[in-house]
Length: 121
Image 1 (cartoon, rainbow, N blue to C red):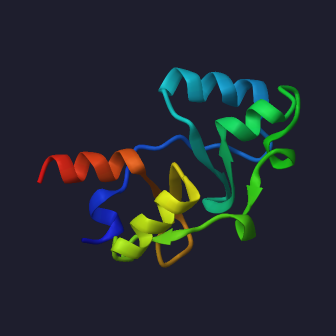
Image 2: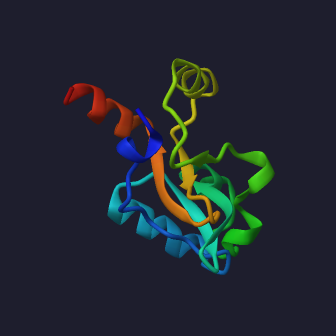
């Protein structure tokens, strides 16, 4: 199975210039714990609810987000392997951003997407 078969294509998009307090409200309203940080259609970082909790609600997301070299990024045509699932479990990661061949964010892959997929098989 490929990542693009399981990923969530209806995801929240956050800008590096968004303010932490506003993003907290958006994540809460949408019942999400994470979001890719996107600028000009490209992934520039990743934000989680935990990052926002330890940050200041008046800070810009660019000051709170995890940078690209600090996160795992999946390509939409990557295979969902046992090794990937083991890594998610080991690191207790909730989700990863998914990009296409042009490095544009096209979705997110979360443990919940995987659970839904396996439940419906």
